[in-house]
Length: 274
Image (cartoon, rainbow, N blue to C red; front, side, top):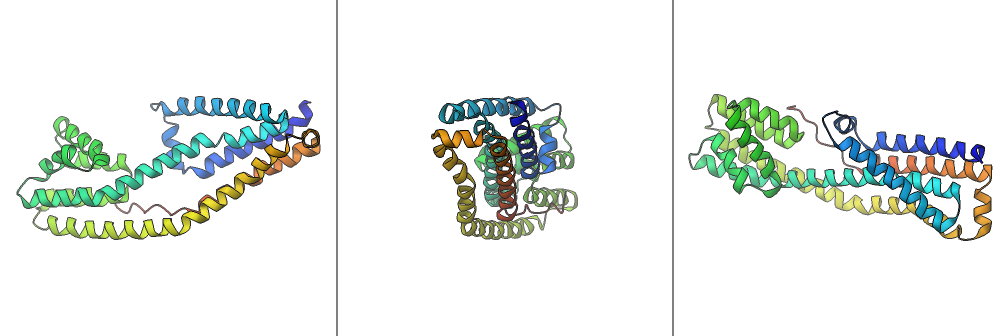
């Protein structure tokens, strides 16, 4: 029994590990592995629960250990994919909110308010998705007092090309005078709006391609679960040859999904002002 399932288990684990590394960039992977972050242990617990629950659920439906192992291995990527999707959604929401925040800064500066005070006001009256960032800036300004250091720290935390441009513009305006800050911020808001509009148009046009590819990835395994209600299917995949087919299927599914993500995803804007 062990010899039959040693190959699929080993190959499946490699496929899951490769999928995780390929789907998540190294920077986010390093953030997950930081010792001061609790997300690593939470992710491990979620992974274990997903593996166990998907294995036993599939086994109840199919009564096949080999098929259950294969399905459980593919299901192991779900928590990470869901988390990644939420992160991308939050990043897009922040990007969309930046033009409004910039407009608020321009209005405050035109009213004669200082740059520091304008930033702290955004903690209460700015875009909702960006308020935590401006609240953090307000707190750091109260404790540290160094305007440039506070913005550089928050810029590093946000890890966004748009925030880099905004904060660097504010730092330069603070150091060398903000007479042209309004014009620079207003022009930056226009560029950001144009970039967001183009990106959303591309996502809309190619979204159906990614959804079709995702459906094509999941369809064979859903069909396998339906066919495994027949005893003949379970017997076939209980053999070493059947286990090998399942192992290759897991690897090919992971590879196809990785390529689909690489081709169908928009590259992140480079942080030229990192």
